[in-house]
Image (cartoon, rainbow, N blue to C red; front, side, top):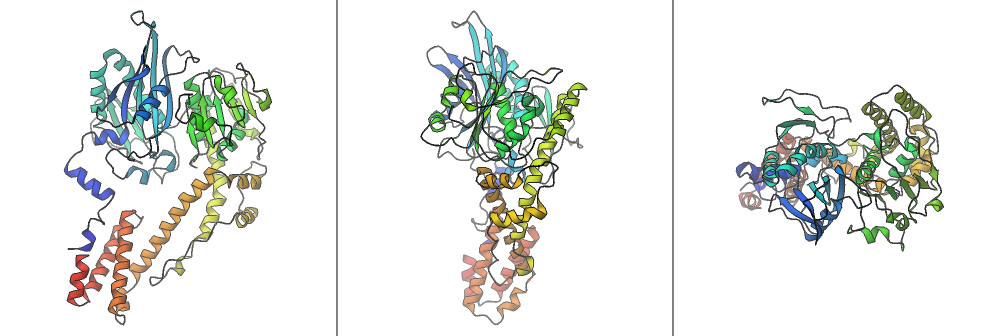
Length: 575
């Protein structure tokens, strides 16, 4: 038996993919996009209760069901009449498998880190309807249709709900079953491709950015293999919100908000509704893209949340989280938190909305606390007055909100990239030189990250921006944040893989057979076992090396085995 066709070598995605092509798994396409669809209703005796979950055999724990119930309804203070859309994020129960079918996800390999599937949290996207209904005891029809997914595609899933929810509220369960069956026919979410997603007579066309792409605008239309009877509705993005709308009342403080998110500071957003709360929290998290926000964030958080006690304890410092809340009770609960953003309703008008002021935390006392940013934080960098002037001019010229958002997003993106670039350049200098790679030795180590050494590089390679301020102070504070820790761990893993790839290339370029000529059988067998281990690891961890390189190494191993005595050959083939 060929050792490279063993079960070990076939572990992971390749094995799962092979199984999938032979026997289609029910709901496998559906589960690539969604975990489930839930209907939450108000029961007079039970309160919020799950009325329906689709597919019926989806496995949600009781804790997850309870959380979904409470997070799917606005609290009584919001007074949401009519239709309301918002989103939430909840922690998965400990011990559940990271995917329905136990497959390793190939999607995350190609998706940028900010769009990857979550393994420890679910995202919930809610369409809530509350209308007067004399036939109901309470006098109101109250129901939510909730899409639960591991994907952070807020724009796509809210667009999906706008299509299916009104129909569901009219036609009930048969309509939902049809929708889920349609989603089960969707193509897989493949980064870098334009995808057509048909549902209820509408075709949504989306493009998910891939790792290798720079963030861009609308999806590029590509020749489609299928004939579409309907002109598709093109969604400019699967995940981007209207940043300008979200930040319209805090525009002059965008620099401060960017720093608070970058540093992973504890922030509470107090809003008049779950819509404003969830959109503002998601907008804040997106300000540091393409950097991944590594703290916890809850677009809509309630007193019934399973983490309520953990996040509101006064016995320790507030955690690195961004919470969106609507219940005025939280004002008292979060008085010890360092940064609280109190917002009013988001109403787009022709003029610049009144800008909230930065206020002292001591003024945060009463339930009718006025709008403002309650913090003692002093920014490291100066405000970019040119950006504010440009956005103000856009308001005067009645520039569309999406254009204003694009200007704001581009500014934040360039600022984050300028901040990260010196760190990336310093990391490159920690890599061992390629010439030091020897096929006969263990790969050289990556040098340790030194904060002081990095600070010295800033004199020559500091952030290339016109924005002035205390950059060194900002970096020193950043080093203590979860965002630095998460970024460094990810980059170090990528660098370790790169070193492994370079070592593999050096091995493949070497004349292994000649090296074995004057070596003992023990040394040769040891080499074979080490090469096999390297080959298996490269395939299992999907190292970014060409398949022909691995095939060449496999061939070299076979050639070396063939040069050994027959009894040893038999033994090695059995392993």
